[in-house]
Length: 572
Image (cartoon, rainbow, N blue to C red; front, side, top):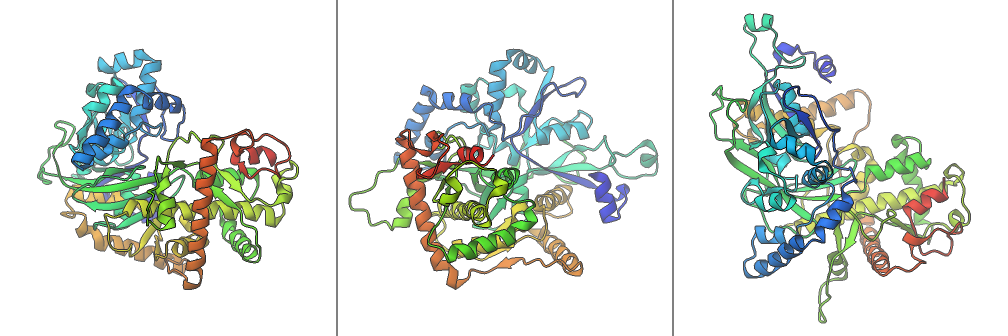
């Protein structure tokens, strides 16, 4: 990675002054303090091994009691803290859930952590430890805020959750600002050897740790309240800038810290190696929503053989949407990331149908209803008549599946935006900034703009989180006083990338305006999609043997909906 960077920028390692790390959040491991060798494998955020453990904890009296207490207290005093408590539940995504599960299965690991022999850390803490030669054991507030054991109201570890999970705060690293002096790089190509030190080459400092989703917000320049960014990668992450104060989050969303500054003098040589910097200033909050379906779903379709390369998708989708407009048949995909909210319809409700349907749905991480993946409704009858390999599907059949999944991705994105912004943002979203690997699809970007009736801006940079980490590092090193001062540099980098793409002859459109002729049909399609999602989820809540999740017949033509897992076996 370092070698590629130096070749690409044509810079020498001696020119580097600071380093920022943007990392995948909620992935952790344990390592030996004395040797710095890992004693466990990396537990990644998408690891489902602790899902049953989380489900059992969510059925406990403790979670039920704090949920109930939160609801009662929120009615009397509608604060963010009480709203979070009323909706709190553990998922396998949270690092705290998998850590508690690990300790429950192997108490010896916990014992040695408490003795100080083993050290816990998420990816940013592990990398910092290695880079500083085992001298800095810290995390940053942006990564910690997504761990499930952080209190966004106090900006500290949550004693309530830690006590419930029986995890001691003694084994957790210090929480520091996003941009501060974490320590000196002593390992790797950026470490200064004895000769470099004799020549007076200054050391490289790690001056930023930041979660990838928050770094992407910084990289997109989403610094103002209301700015909204959608990352389309393995899953779909939606972030909305809340400014300096958090708000009571809707169910399925959680307030996280975007970034924070240090109060220390940046010219000071004090680092977190000797004295962890735990005082935060200029804290910016984000509201975060997550749709677990995205790149992983498409990768599964690719493995089934529905398409060969991601670069071919735009042509396939364009052809499929053209056929769809000429056909009366519509295939709808209900993502497994959706669940049902306990929602009672008022007898005299004047709520528009779309709002009423949206209110019933929420995004869940572990689906207790769609246990065999999402559900396809309205697949071509020819596809369901008998099992056959995916390679034998016609263009119409494979196109119907692909189009349904991509349409569901755009519909779910609109649902996330609608729930995220809600009543707290009176003004219509002026623009949605989008990044991530799936944003390479121009078809998807245009469909997003038409579905949301909002302009979509696509970043020319494939990894805006790297740019965000660079900005955070520059602020931590004192190159800029704050993040807004770095905005011109952000715009310059994007302009340079656009110029490079243009010079290489690669057509790359960065802004997609809603097509007035398509917006209304997409509004109708969104309403139909919401109805279908509600219907399938309600039927699954009271399922019978004829429902999708219990369907194992070879002939699926009489089934109203087909689960993804069942369809995959059908096409194997």
